[in-house]
Length: 154
Image (cartoon, rainbow, N blue to C red; front, side, top):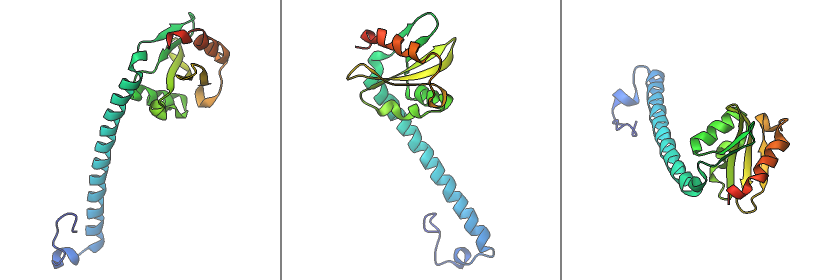
């Protein structure tokens, strides 16, 4: 009641005719309010994350290499990284905060095949995973393609 500025000494609010209904109504109102606040906080965090990701990894944006079948490109936004994780059913969505990692996506005809993490310190493939963290039939070919183009990442 205090949260909504209601008079806690008023019988109208303290002893309503249907206490449960009034309670449920105020709880639902507070939950909607909290959800709006949480949504706004998430929106602000997403804006900040995108800004930080652009600053940290922007120099790599536009980097693409291919072997005429497999196309590998740098993931260029936090939103794109979250989508990659969602579509591939793995946890790459949170990797945008990894300072020394560059995340790439390998595709064939626009279809995601594997997601690659490259260490910016060692310029080595840290991990390369397909759907549900499984290796695909193209795994070795993807790793070799990244390794043969690692000079483009420097």
